[in-house]
Amino acid sequence: MPARVNKSADKPMSYAARAAIASAFIFPGAGLFLLKHYVRGCIFALPATIIIVLMFKNLFSTAIAINEQLQRQAERGIFSFDVVAISHQLHSSIFASPYWQDGKWLLLASWLLSIASSYFAGKKLDQQQLTAGDN
Image 1 (tube, rainbow, N blue to C red):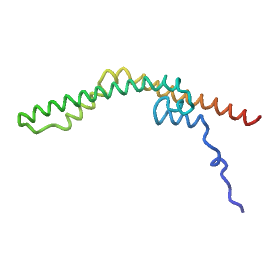
Image 2: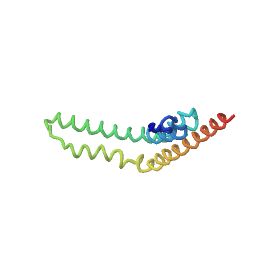
Image 3: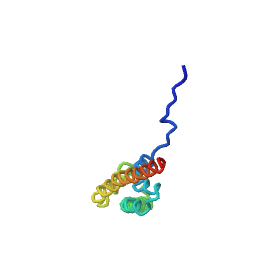
Image 4: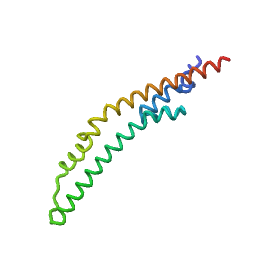
């Protein structure tokens, strides 16, 4: 009896699936960049980038303040520090910041809408390729 051949393994992944996966797992707009829709990709990537940059800016500001505090303590001969308190300060500098409180919904919307937009742009390209193949 001949072995069964899996025909779906030979079929390449659709543009819609590739674009949606790229936008879901890489960054908002990545799927649109993959499809060469650069302006649409920027519409989703820029707000996400701005929010993430602002959150990291806040994190680094907190880290620098903690470093300066530890240096002042070291100059006075105090070499003990609380790792849990430092970790809590760094964590709250991101998740208690106004950038996260206000921006998390914009970031989530940007990510989800980017996935949908990438999928539908890829689906349109798949349809065009399918109709071009029929001719």
